[in-house]
Image (cartoon, rainbow, N blue to C red; front, side, top):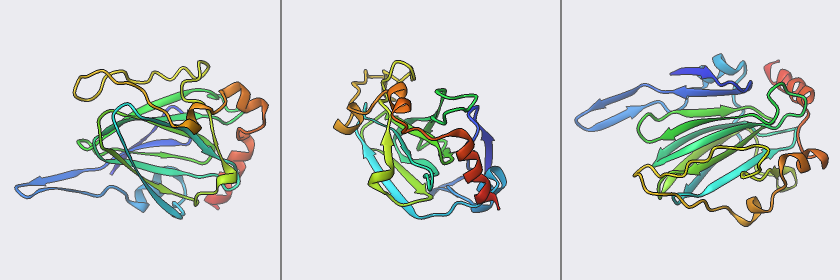
Length: 205
């Protein structure tokens, strides 16, 4: 398992080694020791989610209040998505910045995003299936969102599917009515960078 830290501190890309033969292929999609070596602590697995999305569907930007926050290890088991990590930590040097990674059923990469970061993705073909390993369970009162098409974030969402056809973006009602970055900040919804750092240090012991 190889990994690299993204330009947004607290986010990593993991690339597994895939073995092929006449029967098909085999890979280790997650290794606790590799994650710990990169991140500095083990993933406290509390919940596993699976989402299936049609081409053009955008989900996010989602994040969870700290504590407890929600770290995610995300991989695409079928299809392809453009996975996006957004720095929502007020006071962070990269606040408001985002970075994307192509997750698909070819390279089988995964993305880990620490507590305090926002997550979103755009499906690049019908049936794209993401599996998330989560450090905390779903808690509706702690879950928040920022509008994925917010002009301040200016995420460069893809307009072409994996097969080359044009994409029509589709959002849930909840995501389409989420506040923009500035409004979320003014409402006190966004995590505070020093508080996030302090919390993650407690995970590292």
